[in-house]
Length: 364
Image (tube, rainbow, N blue to C red; front, side):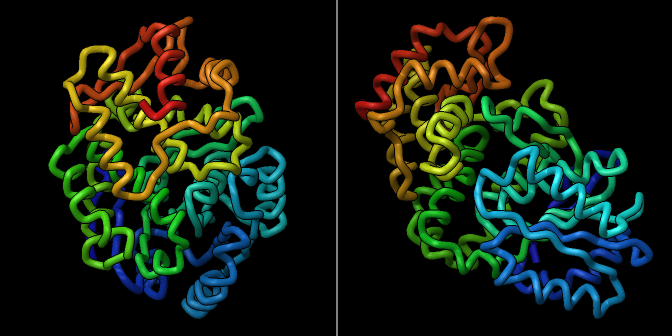
């Protein structure tokens, strides 16, 4: 088992990565202070529930935990205020109290939704991230939880750190190829912003990662989670360097919003956004070849790097104006200077962003 720690003083918590961890969940829960005197609530989705929910429920009940479960539709549409209200109703009807905990069993959507329920139920109760996708190695770490507004992604949220992240890599073996690639997008992102060697490692080991080779994937998840843990430990509330983790997200979130949270997987939209950020970096003085290198790395993981024609430039620009990173009339972007080094630019000219969007559509 691989173990990392997000260092946040008294609120520090472990990230546990390994095989067979779901079957050992009760011992980890006891170790990290989840009481058996109050009910646990598992939130999962329709895709994950048939595969892992019955076994987890049985394991926890056999160890003496009282468990209630709620299953939401799969996909980004479940990060809504309507589904959030349904989850609050389920928590109240399940008699959760201040000592209860919410377990997020699933990918990033489930983690964000369940974490926001935990952050707001009775003004905040414990929760555990149990990711079942590669993409969630990013979203499960750091305590950013949220639901979407129709006009903007993740606009309604909180910072609420989990008690632990329990990452059973066996659950990743059932992922479809498209989801694997989308998850690896965020893994590569961590290398692009902080660790040049790791970014090149992702490219060099792309086929093994895509094939879900256990040792290769285990190292990739450990390093990806480790980079994020380092950044979160230094800047929990995104007052500085944590914003670097948003590389590709300004354009990516706009793509998701315009396409209706369905045409693109999150990691696919972020991949296009990272290609756009590399283009923007070159226009703002980054090292020559940055865009070509970034695109090559993304393509090695079978990720998209161009915008489809039907996503209009005006609509994308309007969506970016609603993004949380649009401040005081300026466009804020995370811009790479080279592979492995990025910076926050708070006054990017709108005309340059529009030009980048047009070039992304042409793949230039």
